[in-house]
Length: 143
Ligand SMILES: [Zn+2]
Image (tube, rainbow, N blue to C red; front, side, top):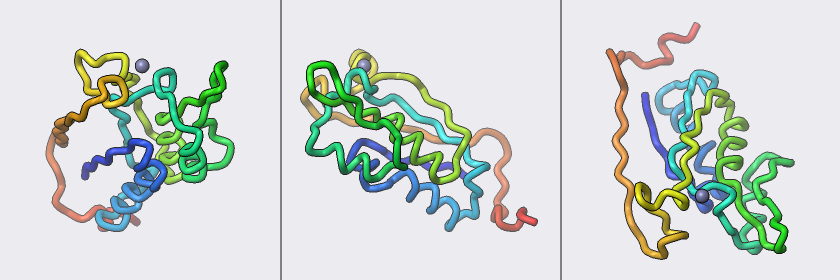
């Protein structure tokens, strides 16, 4: 099976990553250790100036000790959204994670960035599975 979740800071603070993995487990019998997760284009820590007032909400949603809030020399803080998502995937038992490495804020010629462009927009995403797809419930395959 295949699924997608949008994980901006509010989603991360609400635990969307773990909730998505749990939904895949409960609905389709997926085992987290068998899940491959891909992280798409997103604003990266170097570009993500973040509000100190919101930082605790993201920190609280991630495992202890994960440096999701990165202090800057000028006293401001940046959010490492990718570290936050990876930590939540790890906590959910997903170990196979691939990151696109694309910063939307640095590449507004190809990607939309609300933070940089100060306007709203939409991403279109198409998901698909290659090859033959079994219609059997995966729970039948567990020993
Ligand atoms: Zn950037």
